Amino acid sequence: MSALALRIIACVCMLLDHIGYCFAGRWPFLEPLRWIGRIAFPLYVFLIVNGFRHTSNRLRYALRLMIFAVISQIPFALLTHPANMLGKLNVFVTLLLALLTVWATDEMRKRRYTKFLCFLPTLAVYLFYYFGLIASDYGMKGIFLAMVFYLFDGNRLLTAFGMLVSFYHRFVLHYPICVAVFLLRRMQGRAYAIKPPSPVSTAEIIQLFCLLSLVFIFLYNGKKGRTPTSKAGAKALQLGFYLFYPVHMLLLFAIRRLLA
Image (cartoon, rainbow, N blue to C red):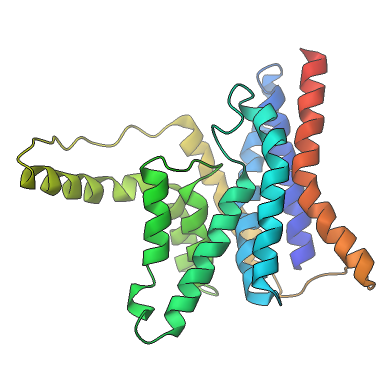
């Protein structure tokens, strides 16, 4: 299965997910579309890491993600939280941060004196999310998942396990964080009670469908797929996949308004 095929599957699953998001409240039989939609995000993260490995210009790749993050914010906010346009940032922001984290980690691993500190970029981004300095679609799940694809490339068992940890990291990290906070508070002479994590939500149970994405990822053959031979055609196809995200959200927003 080529990278082009993965992109098409990701786009279709994302579209189905957002159709379910918009209209399952009106037509409950559409709810299973949201389950299918869980396949999309891991595919996009995998493609980001794969693109990092194969792109000829990583800076240009990051700038392209940043540009489409800006373009996509209004459509994303209109569809999900129109009352607060910047309350939560779109998935392009998550993918951009995932790319930058992998890039920084990769650079640090190459150097003798920083390779043992290569976890710091992931930790820094995690702290930004943990303390609410940034909020984006899928958030830290995307960063952890990108690191899984980067570090465990080719190891199916570790990739599957890493995906589960990425999506359910709040349970994995809950007690280590609580213990760290407890010790800090005790050093300050303040009390702190360690509480169990909140119960698993319905949305988190549905998130298990993300594992289906591994079927497609493990079938990836390392090839680009049949893309246009001309440079202009290849660029148009590339931009088309990027534009699909904001354009389809605007269309769904308009349809939802018409049906309201």
